[in-house]
Amino acid sequence: MHTQNQLTPTSGYIFDVNDNTRKILFIGCMALCVTTFISPAIALLMGLVIAQLTGHPYLQLNHKATHLLLQISVVGLGFGMNVHHVMQAGKEGILFTIASITGTLVFGYFMGKWLKIEQKTSYLIAAGTAICGGSAIAAISPVIKAEEKQISVALGCVFILNAIALFVFPIIGHHLNMSQTQFGLWCAIAIHDTSSVVGASSKYGAHALEVATTVKLARALWIIPVAFMSTFIFKNKSKKISIPYFIGLFILAMLANTYIPATKLISPYMIIIAKAGLTLTLFLIGAGLSRKVLASVGLKPLLQGVVLWIVISVTALYAVMHLA
Image (cartoon, rainbow, N blue to C red; front, side):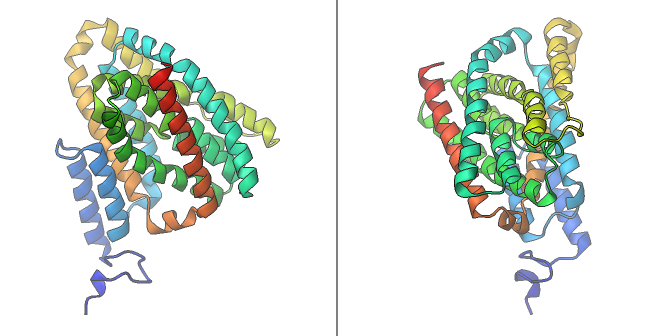
């Protein structure tokens, strides 16, 4: 008998192992992710493999864990950044940010209508593509009273495309000989989630990471006005809006690194911890993309997500190569 090596209807995974074995394998992979041997892209791939082979033993905790880890990691990255460089990068990215967010939301609305996708699902996919992926979906979904299925479809679509972007973007950037500033801007505009933006740009270079993180966090602040707008679109004024307070801590970390000399003593260690946290976050995101999640997305929502992503990626690429 080789039942452990076959896909079983009871488990839905390629290897039907017991809970203890599943947990040991999973914790072992997590431990590997906080070493210097595993890159962010490999961590994401490893998570995807685990999700299909044995499954995520702590799936119910995954969303909260990735959310918290990402925020801590982003704050840690602030200890490696200089305020003056960041302000320059922010000025370069502001017009692209406004144009891309507005254009993506408008195009996403009409595309959802054309494909006859359920309105809230279509809106969440467009918002996730326009602003900052899973964070935007998580902040806006309670405001529009989205159902669990609608949220899952939007998150699944965004995370699938994030996984592709993390591998594809650096290859394209090198092929086109993009500067680090150009690549950082492109990542921040065209990749949905902050985790994948940081993962892709960190592979390209330190300055690319600085530009990408700054512009992406500026985009994340657009969650607030878009969430307010959503209350009127969906006629719901009773829900509180989730404000990304961790961005304030990121700014404080940058200020400390720029103006407080003593901070230089701990900055290298904070950056190491932050990068390890980011790698672990990407592993957990990959591990959450089970066969069930991938199958639940559906063809039309995935098509909307892919087309929106391609349009914003190509438009942003042209803009940073010729207009920046």
